[in-house]
Image (cartoon, rainbow, N blue to C red; front, side, top):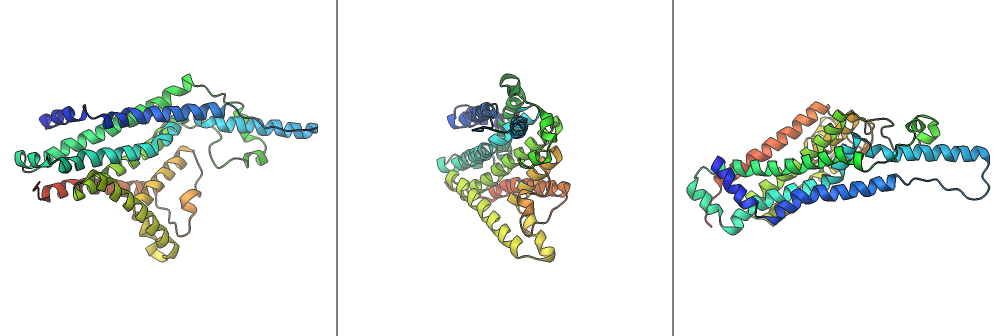
Amino acid sequence: MGSLLRADWLRIRRRWDVWIIVLGIPVLTLLAYVAGAMSAGNVHVFSSGDVPPELQAQIAAEEAALRAFSALPYQFPRSIATMVEGATLWLILGAAFLAASMLGNEFSWGTIRNVALFRPDRLRYLGARLAWLVGLILVTFVATVALGAIVPALVRVDPGNPAALTGDPSIRGMFPPGPTGPVSLGGALLVAGSLFCMALAGMALAGLAALKFRSTASGILVAGIYAIAEGILASLWMSQAAGDLRYVPQMGLTIRLSALLGDAQVAAGLTTAGGGQSSSPGWVALPPLLGAAIVAVWLLGLLGLWFVVLRRADIDE
């Protein structure tokens, strides 16, 4: 196994696309975070003409609440969740591309034949490739989390007066549901971990499609089509189903990943329950631990199919 890991390293270290993903995602996310932080620090409520004193007081209170609310996402430790949330799409796409290219290219280039000749079981080869994929995604994720923890000390956003968010109820109604106080480090990491599961799901789905269809492009395309089709079918099912049939779409991968993120955000205090997808017709809320277990079954099942597909594949290139 060690020799296979070293051999894969010799291939990976010369691939610019890999390093563009591993290094580029944290950098792009950092730039987006800094831009958002700078915008959050420039909050003003403007008025014109002669404003009565009582209205001036109300405007000042609204501006203080708006400033405090805008600064919340950029205060440690919530900044970790903010940083990772900004990188979620790139993490999913990057993980899917890495899996599809590192597995599909072996068929496109015909190098998979050497694997079949020297290692008939093929399982150790795939295990080493999977280890590298998870490792690269984990490095990218950890770098993003680390930036989220460090940047608030370098790019400071004035928190304003947090007490302004707990004052007049009419002012609180100006903002979407969310925290009006600090978020714990554990809560921020919980949200980040749920987003990491999304990246792993993208890797597992695209990798399986690439192995099955023996192509990088086909792997990415099929994975994207599956995710979209599952979401559409689940929405249609939930709008029509009744009774126990309502639980069927709740088993879908994309539905469970969205619910996993929602459960993590509620647990961390980043949002309140009852909004977003959970408010759609036909939605059935599952216990968070059960939902997480379903996601784990999906991930293990998809990765297990990698080994089944490659072991049974006819290598005739």
